[in-house]
Length: 361
Image (cartoon, rainbow, N blue to C red):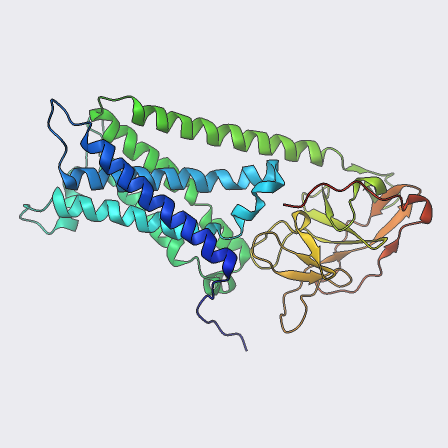
């Protein structure tokens, strides 16, 4: 029987969260300090306005950072540790955004005859023209998305909805970013006298586009290394033996787009699905710990020989058959049922030359 309990924090999680929270507190305090010195016509902004802008800009910076982590980790393995608790950053971003919403409701609609939340939703509904566009609606939409993502971040929802549905829902974070960008463009930027905010928004968007393009290009190059063999056999050429580092995985994509991770461990080769059963994490980017594949996202583990998690865990992934053709590794693209035991392929002595290792992330 499955059960769920409160999340326990280890040392790495505590450091991760402490640094993130400290950075948010520092950002807000610095923004309020320098914002008070940047008033118009010698008049300092009021505290409520400073808080609203500090929380709002901080949430935008956090959201930009969250969307940068994925492509950065693809481009450089040293960024992989940032992926481990990325959901914590998502919840923190939602919390900071809630501070922005609270500041707006407590100040701008404090003297309205309507309840603050209702006043927020009906104050401006103009969407027929760019000038005076109802930017508040965009902000509300973004906040609702962040709330949904934060509320469904627990593993209960991942297990209940399934990895593919859960991941599809959480891809809405890109929609939240677009709405926030529009909220700023049609709101704060229309009244800004300093170019700082416009520069920050432009740099954020440009950075995200460039990072995703570079990560996509790297993936396309790696996919291009995967070539089919003669049509008379279902086996395909995955790579050369020398391309697989000891204790690590080598990821290839099948003709149908399914990613497979081939691992080299103690002179043997094994192949499994590259998608972690927990959250579709990239297993091929993980390390072998105690002979088990360890997902780089959340540490879920699978045995090389059968793709099963060690007891008492019950997660399973598909395995694949391998064989060698000289120095080439051939892969049967037909997956075995999750948890199927497959004998590892022994690497001949002639190809046992140690592979140069780089430092682990």
